[in-house]
Length: 428
Ligand SMILES: Nc1ncnc2c1ncn2[C@@H]1O[C@H](COP(=O)(O)OP(=O)(O)OP(=O)(O)O)[C@@H](O)[C@H]1O
Ligand SMILES: [Mg+2]
Image (cartoon, protein in one colour):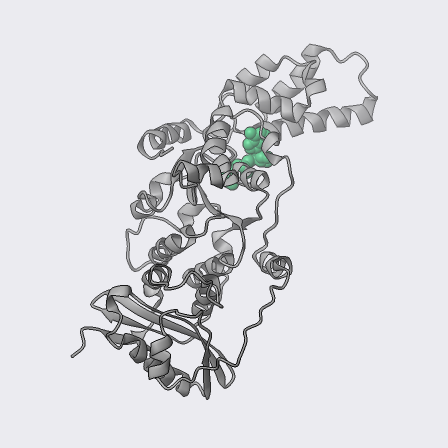
């Protein structure tokens, strides 16, 4: 009895299958069908079988079907398992499945000298040396643009990075760890620095996590795709299937920043294995390794509650960094006030008083308070005309009043929890 057996390919095999495909190539010629296309076909439930020894996948074949014609997209056999008849067995099993769905003709395109030639010959396939292969790349752009459109992604406006006021610690960290290595892959490579593929930004609400993620995409000039857990839930096949579909689509993009807001919703601790959250977290854990293989892709997960993320999710190997984005300190608050008041107007205001009164404000709170004060000043202008003699105290008073009417989003408790997370979870 042979030590291996053949069965249908399952979702959970994907990681191993991709590894074999990458490791067991025999030629340097690019295959006719890219890995992304093969993975795409698998996600679309194309017929595929694997050979396994125990839990280990040692060979795989994937096809795609168009009416009565099928194509073998990829055949691979782990090196140490060559010459055991696995190739022929895989093809036989695939043939059986294709026969069942009405296929009458199977084709395969192989670079010369690639594994499988023998298996195809042994399985009754005839070589067609008289045929030439022609290929044309449709402007990557149009196909990509469609995909991006479906994903609701676009390259953010330029200059968002410079629009982030203050927060110099976070800015420096995010620039050094994320932006620069991704912007300069050749230099990174020279020092064996692997640029990041996936990171978590954590911190209280309104501190600028989404703003930073978007600004990173803006710096890189990569499309930004924002995912909300509730959108995934709209998928007819459930959140886990929605996640798979999303990741399969992202595989087709040249480059992208994929942003998950409220990551705790989809990656919460798997306390109860029967819950939906449990299945979704598992799914995400499985999808990340494949995502990490893309060189020009970055997954950013943002969360207010890094504590409630599943520990397996946070183990090294999945996320390169866990970066805190905390409440702004006095210096950051000053910069943010100036951003929202405008440098000209700010010159006529007691900024120190604003900075002090807005302790525990997030950037979002400052933005809101500045807006409220602007609205008051605007209404007064319409009612009584421009204020000729508005003095420093009066102008400052407008802002202080607005501050007094703004509810801070940060509680003592939030700040304590963040300080705790900072010590317990940050990995920078
Ligand atoms: N450093 C900053 N300078 C100027 N504006 C900022 C800054 N950080 C955040 N903001 C503004 O504050 C608001 C909230 O920021 P953002 O949505 O990025 O916070 P968040 O951390 O993602 O919040 P949540 O946890 O609620 O998702 C946005 O309108 C953003 O423009
Ligand atoms: Mg956000």
